[in-house]
Image (cartoon, rainbow, N blue to C red; front, side):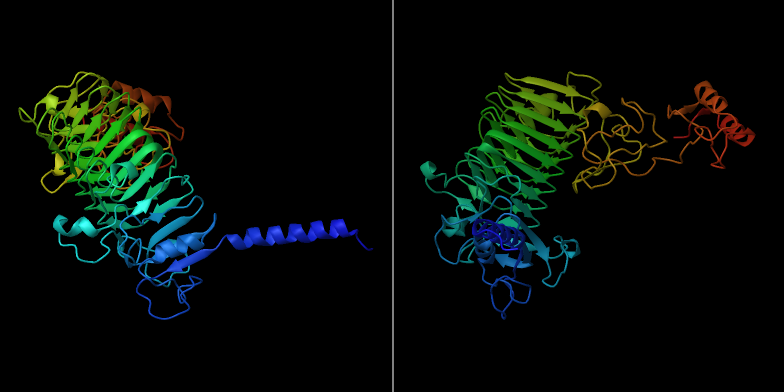
Length: 491
């Protein structure tokens, strides 16, 4: 049968479109340590091998592509043009942390195979004094959707000290303005600087999702040592903010109706050096900030709040620890959190001093080693099993260390709220019992009593709660175990 020419053309066109769609999803390779090969990015052997290989690979990529980047040091450009940055693309995922021979993405280890992207274009940095010739931004995420992924990189040496009108004074590591909401995972932003705000990242009228990231020793000029956010929707999961500095917000500033959420995060050693500052967080101009299961320790400010200040926004703090944050007057409650015109709710948290709210404590949280910033919980910490399960965001199943977020310490009485295992306060969930478990304490009340006995008898000769010796049924042996353990469980 001979088809009409119009149908033939349509079929051929459809085939071409289909083939093109399949071919578009490609993996491109970059390895700055490579010295041979075709330099076309088609394989590890032929990877792009210049210092600007990431930018070259992105320029060649289309939506659906992945870029795999081997360990080494990369730059936004081979020129000395400080305004050139690596621009993320919607639909393109860029992964670092490869050795340079992997067949699957799961084989990489970004913690071992460090992949650095630096703004030090001339390779002459030896501190802030030599950064004036560095890139203004290392990365740009403006206009990039959530499908633009940056995963597994160390981002250093950005120095935004240029013209305000061009935003070249903001976001030394990454800038996202006017639109865009890229996904940033497992990245470390270290030692980036700016003169306006957001030493590591600046976001304006846009958004971003950050998970498993570290922001350390960034300097933010006037506003936000790590982040300066204005009219932003931002999410931070399992992120660490250490040693960042700025005038008004040591770590993160939320301004202009921003909506930011921190879950399982740690803030420590951040400092606000100017007037009206917050060592960790500054919240203002109708912004809404939520911090849940996060730990704030040893942040500082020269005025107002050593940790968090809410000037004219809304802040919700739940299942958090605010401890040893300092400002005028030392480590008072006001230096843990100051509400200077905003609306603040604090519940099921531990704070030095006394904070008004539901079920807050002012007792030592008993960190494993506060001086070494090991903020895991010691045995019998008051933070154990004392949080509110309802305050844990839906879908949160792990803590900062990616251990189970809900672990029932049977040696500690449940003083929080919820069903099942009660969440701990702070960024870390203790993963082992504080003492020998007390299995006869069926309802985890801290004592073996009539309620436990009633539960056991109610399940007599059945399989279920009360089978204390795990032999498949509730019987006289289980009753004997319960009666022998009668009374308060051993501490």
